[in-house]
Image 1 (cartoon, rainbow, N blue to C red):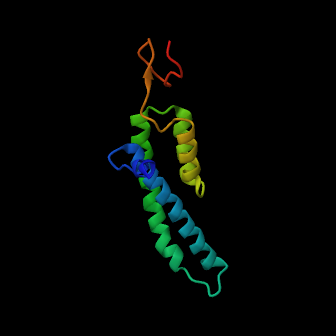
Image 2 (image 1 turned 45 degrees about the vertical axis):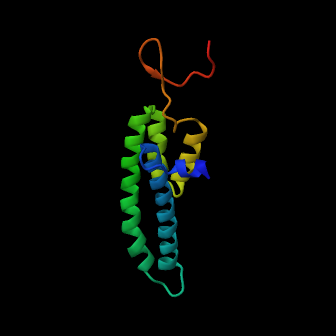
Image 3 (image 1 turned 120 degrees about the vertical axis):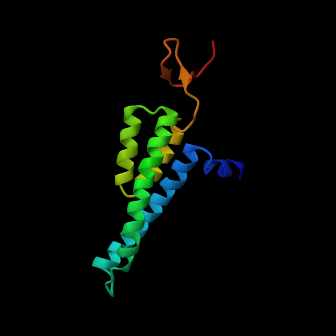
Length: 127
């Protein structure tokens, strides 16, 4: 339970990114359901699209802002930036991105500074 409470710690950019990424995925599901009922449902209705369209648009922009803030704080490389951008476009991609970023240690604030003074990945072993 302690790990879950730290996952959405809104005092950190990573916590905001996780929360907004989850909300972006939920709004995608709502929009996809709305499109189903608009084009294939019986009876057909546009209510879902009218509700979830603007909601998803707002959360999409919020995810991009949260990704920029987190990326600056965590000193992401260009590849991570591009994956975050791509994830915001693909349905449910934000959840996949967040899982990948967590497992590949892109979400930790531990950034080592090399002898040249440039940031790098954390050292895996001490000498």
